Length: 359
Image (cartoon, rainbow, N blue to C red; front, top):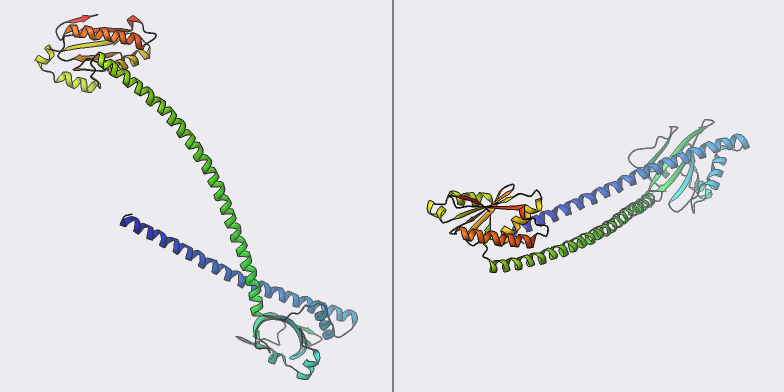
């Protein structure tokens, strides 16, 4: 591994670490946002609960002619479930008259004669006791712990009744935090399972595609092997023909033209140009002629496809008899090579640069 590859790998790893860190940070921000939103929803639910209890107390008072405070306390006793982290209280004006929790009794309240302002130590401000409203705020109660206190003020016959629900802040936050953690865990497990199943599906499809590719390559290999075997047979046959008659080369028209242009007068007088004209319209005749010219060609000779239906064979340092011998050998091989060969398919014309004879 060179220096550039190592540097690129380090950049890739650094990019992955930064990306994962950003994702983790965004997840934490999302969890924090969800917790804050859940706390707002919780406060809203507590405030709705206060409104229902205050309204129901008024309805009961009109119906049973009992005091509003008695009906409100009765509703709390029967309908509000307390715990170690959540309880409810009632205050008339500024005096705390009723608390429902796990161990506080009304007798204890009577002895202590608690004031609401002494019971609730407001954090970051004060509660508007004279305002007929419903609100949720943070406060420290008599046990010195931080609570979320939802307080509703209701005026009945010119008397201010205050109903409050106190929930320990740490308990509420922990409760919603665990719920949100479980929700996120469920979502990420679901995403992981989806990605895992998708990966398996992709790998299975890729495996099938690879198998098809391997099968296709195997078939191509078999076909190539057959072609190679056929080529070996052709090479062996060509070697036999070469032993029987010297072979040289089959070139392009441009090469043969260059050879003709560069022949000296003396070389022309010692050379014979043979034209093979194709009279048949069958395309296989041209193909077979081309193949035979590649296989059978006189030593010190070149050949090419000169036009659409003509081949040229240039025999260097040769005489007319050698050209006639070449024609004889070519005809014999053509008849052996082509099953449907016709005598007039091919016409041979010999040129020795001075006279032109047709055979």
